[in-house]
Structures are given as C-alpha cells and as structure tokens.
Length: 339
Length: 119
Image (tube, rainbow over all chains, first blue to last red; front, side):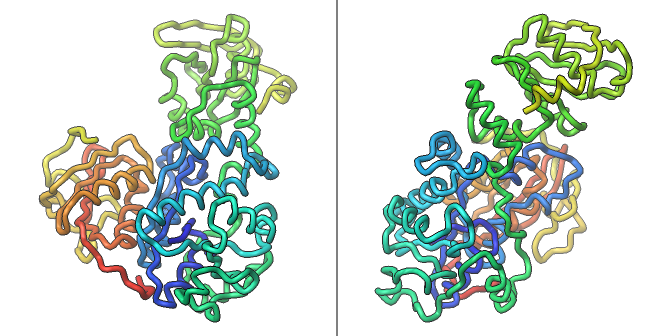
C-alpha cells in the first residue's frame, strides 16, 4: 500500500514495485488544502475539466491500480494549527503532514491486510521533510520503523523488513537522491510514463504565501473556520481586508468569485454598486455603521465608478437594505489593511 | 444519502463532451439514459473528490454486475469518475446531461488484482 499523490515520484515508486509482481493499492488523503480541489469548488464555468482533474485518480488509471481517496480534513486541521515539528516557510507542516498520513496509512494497511507501506519520497529532494534525519523521524513517529519502503531511494537507506523478508528484491530498487529530477525522468521514459503534473509542491495551499497569511489571520482573530467546507476555498477567493479586529471583508475580483461569494451571503452584510461594474464584497463579522461606510468605500474603489468622487453603494443583509454614499477608498488605506 | 433530483425522462438529455460510453459511439443519449440502474447516488452540490469518495463507499456495498447511477453538477467528474473506474476495475458505461446535472453510470466489476503494470 502506498501514498499516491499523482506526482511522478509516487507513480514511479508504485511502478517499480509492480514490476516485481507486487500487488499495489494506492491511498490518497483529501486534506482540504489541495489547490486543485479548491479551484474546482470555485465552480468557474470556463475551466476545462481536464485541467482540474484529480491527479491521484489519473495516476491510478494509468497504473491500473485502485487509488482510494480518504477524507481527513477535520483531523488534519489539528496539525496545521499546532504542528509538533513546526511550520515550513508558510503554514505548511510538512513533517507532521507526512507523519499524519503515514499513521493513517498504517491503520488502513492493517485493515486491508497489506504487508507493507511505500512512498515516493526521494532522499534530499524536499528541504523540510526529505533529508535523512527527517525521513527517520517520520518513520519513527508514524510507528513504521523498518516497515516503510522508499523504492526510489532504497539504496541510500537502511534495508527494510519487506526487503529482508524477500517480499521485495532490493537489487531491483533504486538509488535516486537529491533535487535533480534526471533519474526520475529517465525512469519515466523507460516505463513510458508520459503524463504527470510538474513537480513543485505547489499543489498544497499551505505552501502559498497569500493563502497562509489569510489562514494565519483567521486563526489570530478566531474567525470560525471549518475544514472540509467552503471555508478554505474562501481563502483563495478575492481580495481580503481586515478592517477591524472583528470584521474582515472579501471582495470578489470577477464574475465567478462574485457568484461564489453570493452563495455565502446568508446572514452577512454584502455590498455592491448598483448599475455599474461592481464586485460583491462580503463582510465576515458584524460591522457597525462606521465600518459599513468603510466597506462601502472599499467596494466603490473596485467598481467601475472608482474615478468618481462620490459613489452610491448598496449594503444588504437578509431583508435589510441600506444605501451608502461614499468616496472610493484610497489605495494607501487598502495597502494597510490588505491580507 | 439520496434525494430525487429534477430529471428529464431518458432521451431528452444530451451527451456533453467527454461523456462517451467506453467502447460505444456517442450518438444517442437515449441509449445511455435507458440503462437500468440498481442504485442512485445524488452528489449534486458536492465537488470532487467527494463524489468519488461517496461512489467508492456505495460501490463496496453493491454486487458484481450491479449498476450505480451517480448524479453530479461538478463537470470534473466527467474526467475523474472514468479514471477512478479504470483504476478500481469497474466499468464506466457512459453518461448523459439533463437540467445541468450529469448522470453517470458505473457497473461494478470484481477485478482480480493484476500483479503486472498495465493500462
């Protein structure tokens, strides 16, 4: 049983084992922070479905193996908020993430009666989670010492139980290491694997600077946030502004984002400029009169009437309607409160 | 979870791009719509991978040869469900679209695991 992301490394790891006649079952965990899943939830009509496909399922189809997708959003959020081994450059808890997934995989392995786990990890490839000490820590914390096979880097790592038991022929495993992709690309050519996403780690929103800042803002201001819902998607949508400790504004940038925000408007103040090209601005929190004027000014700034001295903005919340006339907000103010 | 969605009778839908039944020429949506399903899973309002997760769970409780109809409004399912079927060894029969909902049909196959790589 192996972790299959759909990326080249996990695909190659599976294929290396399948070449030895080993039956492989794939696992993929839905954490709620997959960029592709979030783009999909935005529901843009112009996005080609092929570009938003699930790469793990595509890899499973190409390999001829089942990839079981397991939802883990709620549990996973705990390690995003408070990772034992800390965050990377942004909100990415890479080491804790790996441990989390392997613990879950170990449980599933035992349930289905699989003999061992494998991953596509390559020694020295990723700075946070794939140097030797990290790989060893991950294995130990996941309760998998000696049981976790990394086929692509096996010759750089101690022999594992599956190799000692003869389930896997070590001589046919590989010695790939480092950040160069040459070894993997050559192997892909040998196996005639032509289709795979570009390797970058950019598929996880937690490695994204803007997303991470917005998530940190949510946590710092105790904004209600439920993983596995539209909440993570909202952090990818629009322009975000914190106008007070209790109130944040999300301003749609185009029709698709406006439609997404429209679906969330129940019970919230929403702002738009009637009769003009206008974003939909959604307030999280309960803005008082002064803050509603401020939010109206922000809304006007991003409307087609931004050059006018005074703009009429409509604010609505359920059946309440207000008309607020304001000057569009200044860019200097926006830069101060932008998240 | 099942709910009865609004649905045109079979024959009044259309085949969106990518909806072709495997091995069949997509000329007549009534051919797809005439498939008799043994179960129906409504995933409207949910985005992939949730429909796939629910499909997998539902299929585990079905018998070999039974057909599940999956209803979705997420167009990416047109790519993801056939891929999932190929990997899991089930047979993707095709789909039709009606009233902005896509109806996809999957037949459960119990596939013996293959030790050799292949497509």
